[in-house]
Length: 210
Image 1: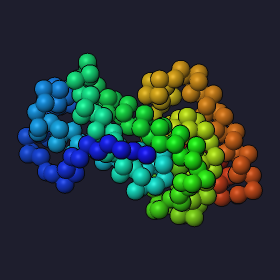
Image 2 (image 1 turned 90 degrees about the horizontal axis):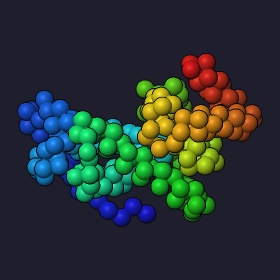
Image 3 (image 1 turned 90 degrees about the vertical axis):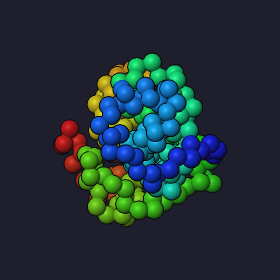
Image 4 (image 1 turned 45 degrees about the horizontal axis):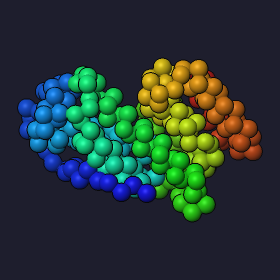
């Protein structure tokens, strides 16, 4: 259960001057404790993290809690950021950690917390072209059977379009481990989808796009 909340104001509109501030300068201001930097960090990165969480979990309402937890951690640990130009990666690292923790919690208590996807997850920028809500639900049922680490690796590679090297860096895994995980997921999904021609076709199309 996620217990902390950053409590930033999502609806807050920052001044136009903030739009021209680089990530590095924004990070320096955040480290210095400037209030406007807290607001701007939320505005700049919260939508991206919300979409990442929604795609990984398949449930938008849970993504809201993930975002709150991520930015609680970002703001409380901003002073640990040693390379200001890597602010986006800093935020993403917390998102990946929190999402992985939530996947583990759901896996451990899946019989109590199973949730169907509430709405069609935005797959516009991913290699998975899913237009049917029913197909999406069936697909996420298969993802629910994966180990949390494998599911996270699959989501980062296929939903967030990260390279194998980026996935490895973000998850603190070796590239060989990431490749093995992706191969394991591919084999599992292919096996599980043998009786579902639509899922099998979806996975085959994904393979052709690589």
